[in-house]
Amino acid sequence: MLYHLHELNRSLMNPLVGWSGAAAQLLTGKENWLSQLPGVQRLAAGYELTYRLGKDYEKPAFAIESVMAHGHETPISEKVSIAKPFCNLIRFKRFSDDVETLGELKKDPVVLVVAPLSGHHSTLLRDTVRSLLQDHKVYLTDWIDARMVPLSQGDFGLDDYVAYIQEFIRHIGAEHLHVISVCQPTVPVMAAISLLASNREGTPLTMTMMGGPIDPRRSPTKVNDLATTQPIEWFENHVIHSVPSNYPGAGRKVYPGFLQHAGFVAMNPSRHMSSHWDFYEDLRRGDLEDAEAHRKFYDEYNAVLDMPAPFYLDTIKTVFQQHLLPRGLWEIGGQRVRPGDIRDSALLTIEGELDDISGRGQTEAAHELCSGIPAARKRNLLVTGAGHYGIFSGRRWRETIYPQLRDFIAEHSGPKSAPAGKTTAPRRRRTAKA
View (cartoon, rainbow, N blue to C red):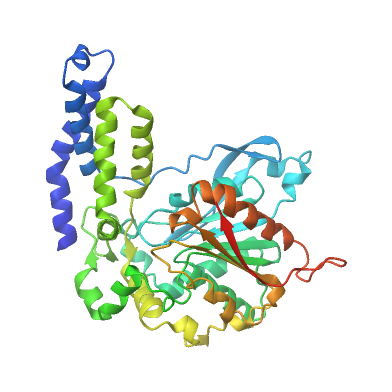
């Protein structure tokens, strides 16, 4: 019922929101004499703020048209490599990948970036992908809004997520692949690769875990506390709703994106209020550069998707309440998930010192679980001053984290044993400083 009330409220607000947007454009148009009247800037700023607070935010485009790779300005095209009901495997194809004269680009490592299915669209990793494309061939999991998936496509749970990752790894080819998982997917990615190893299938050359809840018992955050203070029945009764009839997925049980967005905002309400007030002041003063930066951030931040209810509930129960992965008790399809069986993949974990979603040590726990990987092929990177989003986007990502990730992938892009005549430093904790 809550979802239906949300849609009703949205429908009732649409005329006001649309009118506010039109009025803001009208009053700021340089060709309109009204824009020169005293007080009009303030009025227009109020209209635009109203518009942006009430509008619907659709999934943004990746908009990565080109990158500078090995000294060449390289066009980029998006291609769907595999289309699944709940996810598309996207290839960001560089034009130079097919040009024989640019052999250094053709030899670049292949990377699969597993984006989180946790409320935001995969476009949240735009900065991650853009950086990686400078030196790698890049694939990305692009998760589909559950409200757009018809009931005829069946349900989607955490085990299905693991199966998707395995299928994508097999499709690309584990023998030359590097997997990067960001936040939530660190757990299912660990499971997927563990099962491949247990079944004596090929595993990726490297796996990089970034800010994820491998063992959420370490340094619990507010996110962990919420998941553990209520029984699973509370989540089933309070946050799971049916998709309304005006969407293709009508009747599907989901955890709605608008509830997840409300949770995001509730973690730092004063910061968001301050940001919107600053936006209003920027518009009033005519500071268009800062105003545009605000628009770009919230165009992404406010664009959310619905998660399938089975997946959401499985994640709460398996990852945050029962801690089945670190306890060694997780079974998928009757087979135990054994990270210790992974032997041929190098492991890099990345954590932000100020991460308020995945606390310090939660991701590093992967090293203890992956006991079959030699210590010389493990590395942990603790990024001083970085919050959760700062480990995969922004200045610290581009200047501090990406260069080390790029070098780690390059170091392990050859045979899985250390090259002859080259020694590998023993595992040590590295702390990056911005």
